[in-house]
Image (cartoon, rainbow, N blue to C red; front, side, top):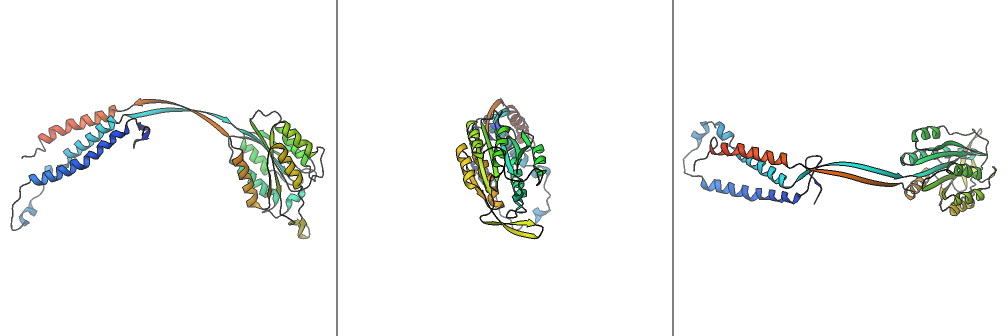
Length: 333
């Protein structure tokens, strides 16, 4: 029952069980009511009309004051017995964050509209939500098509990262799908990281057909550097609508799932397949749950007794009550 917060903000009571004494108010109030009723004399009269013309005196109107003073004084004494305390708290938080690199495919096939409005914009939206949900982690962004480059190095400045994410678009680099180069560039961004947990989230919607780095070799490098790679295959099964100068056409969806599965398996990650916006969001949410940031919090607390104000209030009210009860509001037997 320690540390039960009182009605006064910032105050806790060391001995809150003394508040059980407040229950005595109920039987005492009942006894006073019946005792007062019993002590009153009664007689029978034919009508009370004559008494209606008699105005109440100020003593009658204020006769509740002594009882109220006594009641509040009693509550104050109980509060003092409960040992109210104020606490000064300092928190020392140590964050064991996760260093993350998002490797995003921006090849021409990401224009497919099986995701709304297209694969790339859907991936950017979900990646933005993922970044906003991990404020204590350092995150970087690598984009790749026929080649790869770093859009944003690993940073804790998420506002800058989000700004650079929004600038990602098609045709800024040569087209193609260089999965090995994208993975290799992401690994390079984590090469000097001292974080206990280092992960890469690599998304692709195609088959490796360009680049200088073999994807399987890149996976082995990631394994040796204790970097876990989560891979995502984006695209519907079979065909997907694709914008062309002649209108929307259906194109086949080709994803090298075997390659993505192998990369994830070798590095201790996991492979996911996302076929629409909702499933892509669910993939990032699952990764978010699996790679939690560790927060170590040390709390320093200094408590000070604060019973004196309650005791003082009770004494003052009792001092006021006694002369009022036996002078101004005295009741004749």
